[in-house]
Image (cartoon, rainbow, N blue to C red; front, side):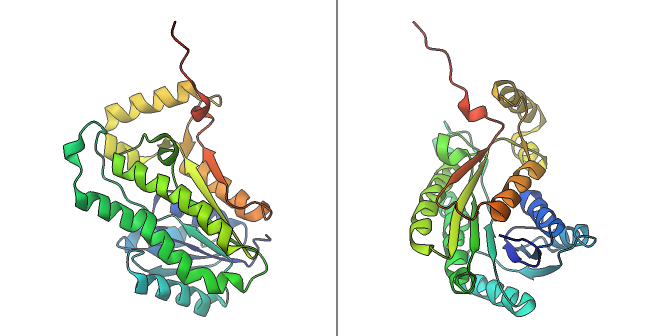
Length: 260
């Protein structure tokens, strides 16, 4: 897809990976709807960081757990830019909880996490389908996680939600062609404040060192590295759908030696 003058919605674009994706896409000439749920100041900062880029931005509040908000977000994008080519389902939440602490997760924790990480993605996709199908080539990218493949993440509920998202990506890819390509990106350990806040500085440093050591590329992902990969996917992989792309420096390739 030619990204110049294409139009993308990026959910959860007020910080982290979503903000980096908005910057990457506008730098390539794509116009971006910067979505946020509660962090209006962060959305303004994202839009300001894109001001000198070729692509333009438009800020729209929406909570992806609310179906009406998803419909409004898509309608606002089309009304403002006249079309929709790309949907980046990036909004996500977690609860940090050690996997062995089964009592640390409640039914409501699972429902809250699934509401954003899975149901929200479905609702956004359903809302955007008609607009995306008007283009000969359109892309949906779901921000999953290596946790959805390995079962290791910030919590068991989070890992389960991302595993379900990987599965739903396959289902959507089957039914949304030929106009719409649907793929998932699975970042591994991502350097930044989100994990630092959730893990604490000491655990964060230890986990980072472990993953950097086993990764063939000897480092872990950053928000910029994930955003670069996503931009390359929507900008140059029109014949790819139903794929799950891991971005972790190859850490997932590590296997422990067999014991005798």
